[in-house]
Length: 162
Image (tube, rainbow, N blue to C red; front, side):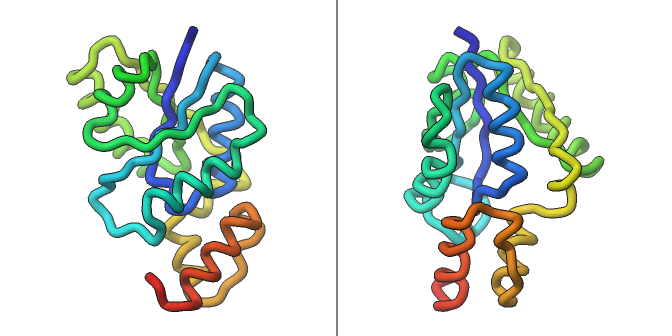
């Protein structure tokens, strides 16, 4: 069985993430969406909220599992018997950063491959960070994230819980 992991913070999950997930499910027998617990950055949603939002979006996908992980991605990937790490690329600056990570991952786990998937063109211009900024300023993000994610953003950002 060919298993891949698509890691990320998913704070929050966007249509860009879902584009990558949908396409990766066609390439592998099983896809694990790995939601990082220790991100090194302040997250808007805690790990349980992020897991819930991701699980809601992939619940109908039969070959997708959602799991949280701590520590090194390569250790998580080995534990889950993954052969591949999936990374989404939007712009050239994403590639530079992701390329550095892939080289380090290859040094730590030589048998683990990284595959870069280009995000569909309609999702190139936004990131979770931009979506949070727009939402915090009461901008509409409903065409950038699923409805339950938009609702969670509005609730969190409009009640000053961030």
